[in-house]
Length: 123
View (cartoon, rainbow, N blue to C red):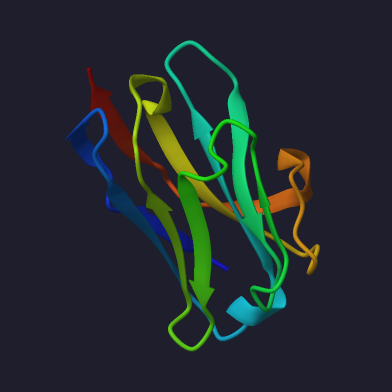
């Protein structure tokens, strides 16, 4: 599966952005999906994950209550709605696909990655 992330940009603190991830191929529903982010000078970290049907969802503690992950298998799309953004959310955001259908928070479990989209939150 090939992934293409989009929707990043510059936003003020307290604002919102919606990231999208378009997946190629006809087997999108065969993958668990996730979002990860990498801030400047830091390692890539887990943000959110969703199982193949969208019934099981996981969030990093830092984004719980502010971010919402969702997927539309009919459209081969993954989304990340980000509200109440803070400067510490500034990072390149990556979507990723895993053969772990139930979803996972572990980056090494993801075999397919999009190119990343930059989110910058100004204070």
